[in-house]
Length: 504
Image 1 (tube, rainbow, N blue to C red):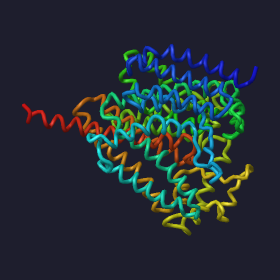
Image 2 (image 1 turned 60 degrees about the vertical axis):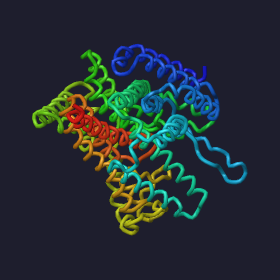
Image 3 (image 1 turned 135 degrees about the horizontal axis):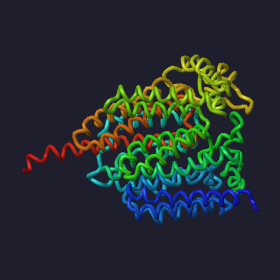
Image 4 (image 1 turned 135 degrees about the vertical axis):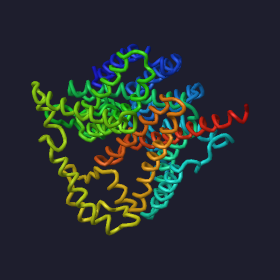
């Protein structure tokens, strides 16, 4: 039996059991009919991925399913997030018909954007009630960053490549940000989006735990079956004798990041679950996936997420102190139990495993600073050829810029870095402000704001340890859009409350 068929059998067994177990809990968050529709689409898309034997057949079948079912979705971001991780982002070039090399590169993420989000974006543009672009301070930072990156796309002098890059920027960044921030207008829409992301991430978590324990990447063989290089997302990387899992996102750090954001969302969603057992199992599954990622950035990011969530809530000092004592107690327990030292050795700073990765990140900053200083304002498109960075060449003949902020500064200079940071900092300020206001409306809505604040805070830390590759920007752009939707929802509710006495 072919390896990818065996992997499909394992995935179907894991996922179908998972869907059956979580059905009751998820039905408290979204309608059961919506959950069944999402589940059936996930299964159909997975079967298309593993059985099509062609990238283009897989794209066409999945695209047809999305176009068929999208009109049934009242809240499109929920379905978008639920299917976001159903397939690796295998690239497929659209032929240039002999005129140019290729028109564009399509992958799973862009397929979801074009089939699910683009029609919604057009409808939102035409709707008079849609908040205008620029109504949120975050919009201006996003537009400024996009405008700069669009101009810099033509810097190498290739017009065709520049146009292709500009199209990619607006499809990959503005489209998910705009639809997330404008299509969601109430708590129900926010809940659908967060539920879709969390349930999809829980499947990723199951796959991550399986891959780490069994030492088998379930999605590697299917890449070969699709006719592409099955090692395009890297080989079997180990840490302390365990496989670092990829699932569908192609990288263990990316996987850990996705699960950290899902954990942030679940801190809100668990408030809506009636069973303490469901809350515990949900937290345990996501935490288990984060641990299984064997990625130190997401490990620290998850602690920062929980600390941020607590810090802006009630009894913050007492609860943050309790979190600190809990971390110390867990560390002491790990040092006493058999095998615990193996985990401690993988920790950042105090651990001994793979310390070369830590040193590489420190050396990268040192090497990049002179290059940034030389092209201070607008960066350089060929920064990797700088002598200072050439010394960072690894055995695979690549220079891995494992720091998103350094990457932005190298490519677009301090102007680009200020705009990029402004997007995140402005989002945090807006959420903090509106989460306080939300306490006057409904405590649960304030908890949602705290969970979003924590997710953005953790994102800002984790992308300091990794470049914005594969699913990382695909997650944080709509995450920022959801935060804007949250602040808009709070403003709408406050406006309605202010109008009540006048109507009376």
